[in-house]
Image (cartoon, rainbow, N blue to C red):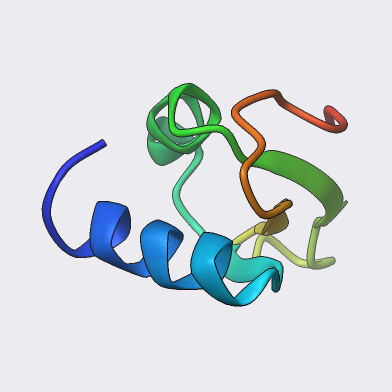
Length: 68
C-alpha cells in the first residue's frame, strides 16, 4: 500500500477508527485485500447496473475480515 491510502490508514490507526470505502470495480478488490481491508457486503444492481462492494479496514489490522 502506498501514497494516499497508506496515509489514510496511518491516520485511522493513530485515531483508532475504521476506514470505509465503496468500490464499483471488481478488478480493484485484490488491491484492497492486499492492503488489509475486507469486503463486508456486495450489492448487485438489478438490470445490469454496476455492482458495489462495501469495504472496511479495522485500525492496525492487516487481515481480510470477510469475503463476498
